[in-house]
Length: 242
Length: 205
Image (cartoon, rainbow over all chains, first blue to last red):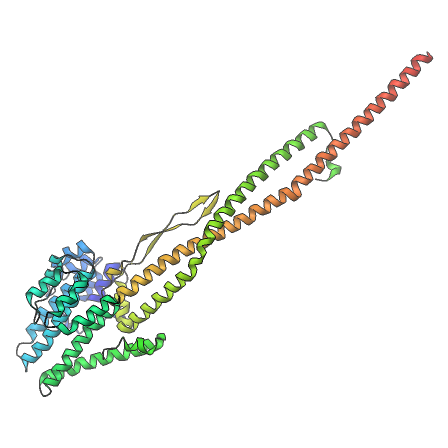
């Protein structure tokens, strides 16, 4: 969906090969209608009667700021709140699985809010796009939605995710904004690993293993791409989720 | 213009002198144009040193793009790139002493903030700046090329006028003047001989 909407935004063509094939029964939206819409607002409006209708509500914010991140934030929120969290009911070892998912939700939330604040999106819009926090406190979400980008690490340092504050501060202070995506992803994998160690004989270990496999696949792609592009070893290391 | 074909009359002399005057005026105008073109060229040449800085910007941007490509992988990279609009440039040519100079103006920028990830945002910011500088440098180089070509043409014209056309006209004028003097002298001599002859005839009768 994100891929199609990004292409719609700039009016570029959609290469069907680049879309991940999803069997119809698992597809909650009509991707064909989404692809055939002439503009991004038309495409988003075609989601009106689906579970991703939250994106339609974010359309006025998108039209105000012209940022695709707004629509993507709304899609993430629907994905986590309407898809992932309800599906956790009845899952074995629910408490730990919820903890793992909660970690990803909170970090996605933090990342989205930071992204939007960096692009100078107003506090109201940031708040309306933020996810329901799990271990973050409501007042922390409120503070982040109003904060300047360089003060966000200070707020994070007093939250449950205080270990994230230092790498965030480093990335902002050294101007290595590009490493922000990796900082969040690393935190997710680090948290998952800790949970796997704590719960080595439970179902959450299986989920953690899948996430580790995902990180490993990413690392393989990064190493292969880095080698192909002639990046040196420290540079390749800095792209890895280890 | 060979001397055999030159009409040796006062009218031809007058016409040749007028043409020479006109050519000399044209030469002066061309000289002024040449000086102005040389001045413009000199002003632009000092900016050519920016090339190294632009190359560095590109190398830096390319590093960032490579990093983003390695972090995101081809699929995500291509998808993120699609959310950023292309840079649009408008052509606004101007004229300097009759020479059409290229001028490009960035009408709309890609807007790095459109990128859905910080990695891409950084790469696009750098690439955006590098491309904008490269456009400015390209325009500068094209202007220099145009001016240099025009300067060469104008210098060639001035030289041709000074070294070939004007001397030739001066020779022609000199030739006509000499011929006219010669003819005047001949006429005077003939008149004198006729007058002497008629005087002798008068005395005899």
